[in-house]
Image 1: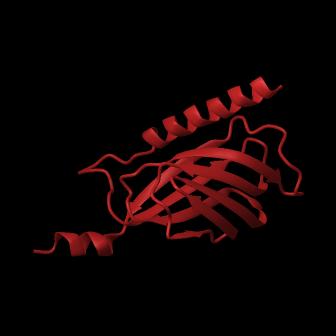
Image 2: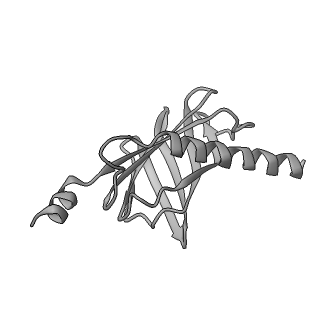
Image 3: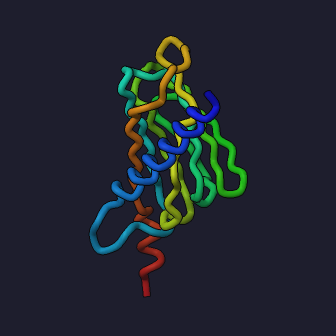
Length: 145
């Protein structure tokens, strides 16, 4: 049983890494400097009520927020653990303000509860998407002569 859990966690980490790489926007360059990372986790099981996620590799966030519920987070070294409790069951979605968008995190879905606060029996097939938005104010300040 423990071996199956480790395999599942490994698959989630690999999938999250592939999603992070696949979600980078192409253009004149990848966002860097201060900005926002929006994280969403779409459930194949219907609306969710709460989730615990870990982000590894990103510089510690200065703010974690969601317009859909309450967020709590703790940063330790290169790992940030985020707990999101939604006001109403729906899409897991929150934002992090970070100092370096170039430090792309990997995301692991640790646990999810459904809309009735029951833990999900499977975390398979969740789609995790990261969107990066550079803070234009800090960009303009950096590029002024």
